[in-house]
Image (cartoon, rainbow, N blue to C red; front, side):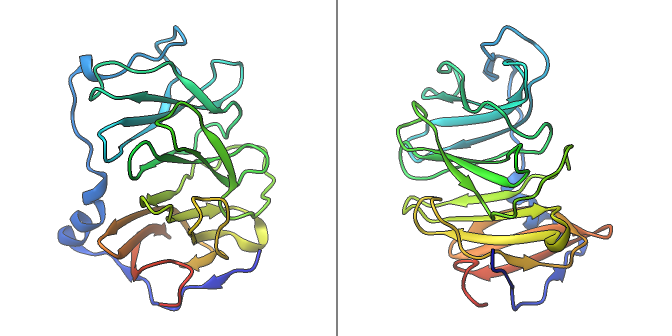
Length: 239
């Protein structure tokens, strides 16, 4: 897969103000125990790496990993009443990586996406629903690095979605010749992606992504420090 390095110098985040800006989109909301959905596999343990998003209609999309079928897989549940009740759990991908975090992004009405790490190869992958979670479709790898690895790197990615079908993502790969963090974009609902654009050095990992208006903000860790890069529009564009 061809790749380019984003032509914009990364900025190391320093101080409380930068940290608050970078993390504002990810601040969790405390909820009462009664608001938390009960998974329908009859187990009270083994559900992990959950993420949650809401679309414009207020529908909630929850994704997590569990091993209800004998192997770790990606599960999802949908609520149309602010979490009071939840639809039957789905399995968008019955086999996934064991313990890399997921990212859920919702856009428009009845549309949501989950970015997660696949099992073979260990590339990040995308599933999508356009009918409010009744059916999930696998879109394929986000950055086809074809990384073969027996084990879990414990690194997920970041995802931003828009109602137009435009998606922006940051991912990490451990593939030997291309190890590092990359930004990619899609304008066709995640079916195809731009060439990966490298962020930082080969030591970069643990990325995340947020959008404010037309500006994207990527962050990642590198040698014990946190770095950030803001760029307008789409990662596939020169900035």
